[in-house]
Image (cartoon, rainbow, N blue to C red; front, side, top):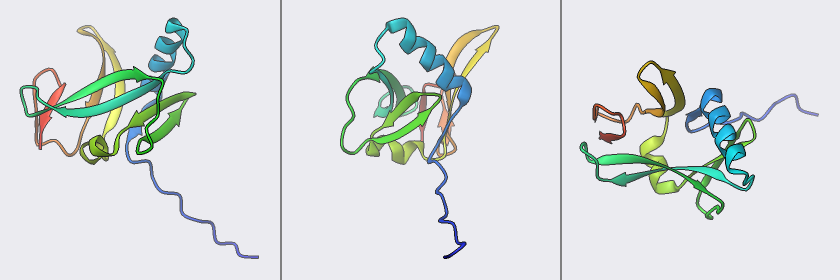
Length: 118
């Protein structure tokens, strides 16, 4: 019997506990436990690309699926190439509360943080 343990690949991005708990709260408020959080990247915004968040019940064959705190996060393969290594978080401050994406691939971002360029 071998003592070699297979190496576990690191997740492609960091979905923080704080973000997962906020999404879990929002899903509970909606009353639909089948909802999953979809994060995507699309063209547009003031910097060239913009982030999008949506609740979705459907999982596509090519979706990356991550789970944290009972919340399922979905990212399509095209968006994943722009989000690799990013951190999805939820922040509350005096300025308000919002989901944030800290993306190491972005060369610049807009002031609101919802769009970026590469």
